[in-house]
Length: 155
Image (cartoon, rainbow, N blue to C red; front, top):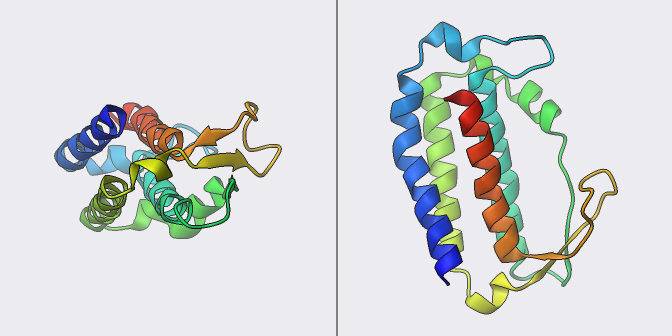
């Protein structure tokens, strides 16, 4: 249970720290793209919203759907493009990110320990090179590691 508690604590720290740090970045820097194929800082935060939405669904469904639970990828670039995060109000974007992640904390805090061991498999050959089976606890930890990676790009 220590691993899940540490993961929840890390996620709560991000929820508390990210909005203040993000708000300190000048508006023109938030929307700047280093090249056409790269995301701006706002788009990175938007991608983290997309990741949160997709993973929230996974964290819920993995608890009651048939095992092993099959993970399928989502079209990340398309989600960012269609959501127009660069044009979104920054306060609303931050609120969206905070609210979805607070719900994720709510969900993962209440997952029964035996469900954390539920088997996860990857359903698309292009999704992951490492095809070994994982479990729900790994998926939750990986969500926070993914978030950390992108937050380092922003800050």
